[in-house]
Image (cartoon, rainbow, N blue to C red; front, side, top):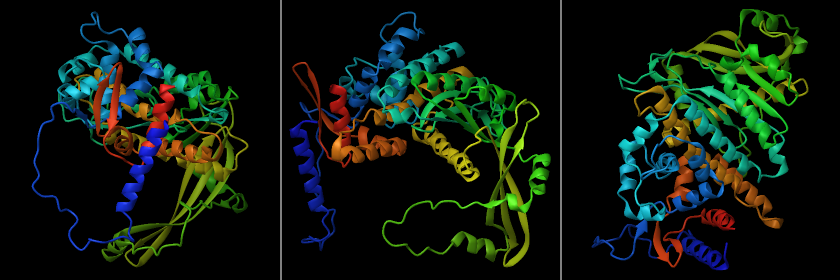
Length: 509
């Protein structure tokens, strides 16, 4: 970052802090919104762009080799006139990054002359052409696209510190994608009556990257095809340099017929939820009381100032007043025993959590209910409590699925068959991976700024997609062409621009 940019950022921050200073309230006795006599005009020479951060993301995609790899390895078009495969794939991702929520929003970008100039494009595919491109995919072509993304992420991983490779954690889950269409090939009715598809999503918990998306019919079980994708993700992580890999999933992903094979690799650990089968519940009930230890969960957050008074629990007041059935957790204990699933030749460690739940109706207590939760693992060294907390951390993937559904609208079904919708999901989810790669490539200055820069990297990895777009993409700017340069001149300041310029400077170098 140049000294000129640093000075301008500091001055912008100083001006906004001066305006927001609560100790200087002079001339604040009137309403704040005082603008009058507003007029609109169309600029002739000055040209502006609302999503100025798209240029930095395009530079990132080019620098990590994604654009060249798409054109070299993905062959779907017989004639590249006027578009290449990379143009189509990036068109989906950039539409999501520019706050597009459906294919029709591509038309807004397509008719924005400044947006086209900002990316050096004469034109981009229209929504209909984008849909036709999805229909060109076969299952093998989608596999090729996923392989390209994997090779690209290895380039990004290779620039990470040694601690990054200690352990990779792979989460897996299925989610329902509802559609109101009636003619979409491959759709079916799910267990809850939803019509649509049931994609499988594998993600890397360390960085929240989407490792794999597999579209399936709506009536397929969650674990179907998961083992094949797990093997693929394991190969990617080991190629990238990970020394250990932890596999996590809920009760639908225990996949006992594959556990012995994964356990044979000393680098692989797994931790899966397990159904509370009658034989397991019986064994848990037969454990001596001394085998159970209290499960003390850590605080959700650290109080930085003084503890605040908790507000009244309005929901519970309504439940009690209307005499609804009310369940409250009283205590939790944890124990363990050895267990060999029917499909396995090896014996594994079964960790069990016993929850004591009081059941009441209104003010009248009814009874205490004991519920058991089981976790199967080949980790023989960690404490039982640690394994339970690690398994519970998998819930973070639910937030990722929500982002894929509602943030960039990747998990939707806008095309007419199962494979084309699969291709749409993979290409649009690239927007989320670009966010993760953006964070991973943030440079950290040694010395006194190291901790601050590491915290900023963790923050960018963890933020929601909308927050990322507002902080780093939705940047109003003026587009200026000078000599051989295309200059994005930012027209407004936000608190995240120092992070933005740190990455831009690193990409230029």
